[in-house]
Length: 125
Image 1: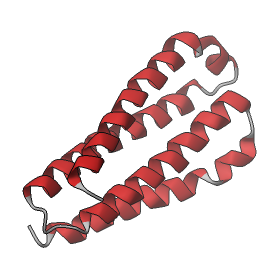
Image 2 (image 1 turned 90 degrees about the horizontal axis):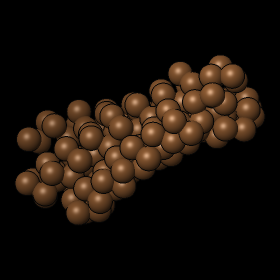
Image 3 (image 1 turned 90 degrees about the vertical axis):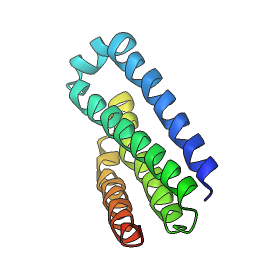
Image 4 (image 1 turned 45 degrees about the vertical axis):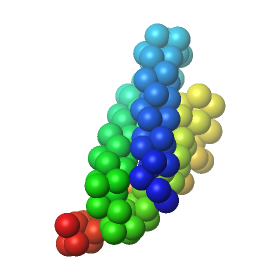
């Protein structure tokens, strides 16, 4: 994965996070509070933002140090983690399908794996 693509993905995740977060806080708040899912929705948005910012940092680092190609793995893991972790929580909150909660931890494992690959890549800095 290139530095440019990672930065573009960071921008996309960040922008979507703003939109989804605002929609949840304003357009869906009553529904989410009635179902007891408002905090779950906020958790999904928060983790999406954390990893959008982390992706931005990784993209910049890869641009500065292109020899750190393993950062591409970090980016893929975080992208997959956000899609599975936050995505499953969004769907859970909007549909009430509780079985989706079973795949949320897979997203968490992908996010953690991304941080581990970053740790390993940092040995080369």
